[in-house]
Image (cartoon, rainbow, N blue to C red; front, side):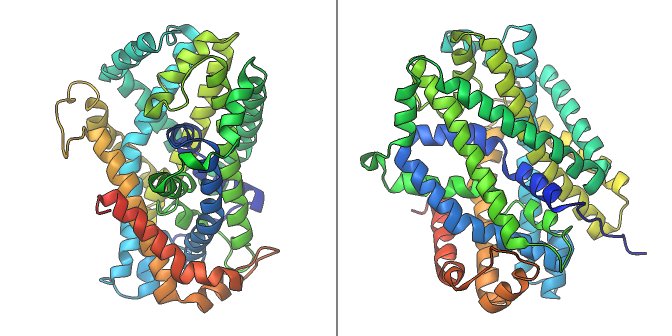
Length: 450
C-alpha cells in the first residue's frame, strides 16, 4: 500500500521552512569570516550578484525537480530517468550522501553552540583575551563526554520535531522560530551599530574596495553562494516534493527564499563587523570567528552576556532549522525507498546520525592524531562535503536541466502555478551555458585542479 504524500499547510509555512533550511551556520558564521578574508564591500557585491544570477535559477531547478517527481531525490531521479542504472540517478544518491556527511559534523557544531549558550548563561565561556577564550574552547572540544551529551540532546530534539511530520512538525516550528530569528538578528544589528567606533566597520563592510578583489575572492563568493543557499544538499528537492504539482509557485518561492537567505547573511555582517571595529578586533578572524573571536568580543562590550547569549541563541535556531531539513531528507528517503513508516525512519535516522557524529567528535580530542589527506576527520568531512560533494551535486543538476530536461520543458514545468516571477527568456543563457560552466569552475577549484 503506497504511503500517502504529505503536503505543506500553507505557502508561508513552506517558505519559512525552506528559508530555515537555507539560513544556517553558512550565513551567520561562515559568510562573515569569508567576507572578512576577502576584503569586505566588493566581495559582498559579487556574492549578491551570484546569489541572484546563479543561486535563484539553480534553487528553482532543484525545487522544481522535487515538485515534478513528488518524491525524494533517490526515488525521484529513478522515476524521472526510468532506469535504475542511469548516471543521472547520481543526483539523488549524491544529494543524500552529502546530507549524511554534512550531518555527521553539523550536529557537533550545533552541540558546541548550545554548550556556549549555556556556558554564557552560567559561565565561564568568555574572556576579553582571545588567547584565554581559545584555551576555554580547546579544553571544551577536547573532552568528548560533554560534547556527546549535548549532541544527544540536539539529535533527540530533531527526531521529535521531524517525527511530528512535515505540517505539524517542521512547518509549525519554522513559522515560529524564523520570524524570531529575523527580529533577533535585526535587534543585534541595531545594537552593534550603536557602539562608539562602529561606523568604521560599517564603512569597511559596505564600501567596495575592488583593489582587494582578485580571482580567488570571486570564486570564494561563488562557492559561498552554493554553500549558503544550500544547492545540491537534496533538501530543496525533498521540500519541493511536498508542494502541490499544480498550485504552487516554484520560481516565486525560490526567489523569496534566496532573497531571505541573502538578507540574513547581510544582516549577520551588520552584527559582526561594526562590533569588531568598535572594539579594535580584526575582521579577518577566519573559522575561529564564532567560537574564539566573538566570545572575546562579547566579554569586552557592555552587557556582553546578554548580547552573547542572544547571538548564540540565534545560532542555535539557524543550525537546527538547517539540520532539520537534512534530517528530513534522510528520513523521507528511507520512507520513499523502503516504504517505512515515519516513526521507524526517524529513529533509525537519529541513531545513525548520532553514530556518525561519534568519530567526528573524537577527532577533536582523543582521535586528533588520526589524519587523512592532512586533515582530521572533522576537517575532512567539512572539505569533502563543502568543496566536492555539494558542488558536484549542483553541477549534475545544472547539466541535467541543460542537457536532459531541456530549456523548454524546464521552463514550462516550472512556470505551472507561478505568479509574478516566471522563468523567462532571460534565464535561457544562464540555464543552458553560464551556470554549468560557473559550477564546473568552482568544482575544479575545490579539487585543486585550478
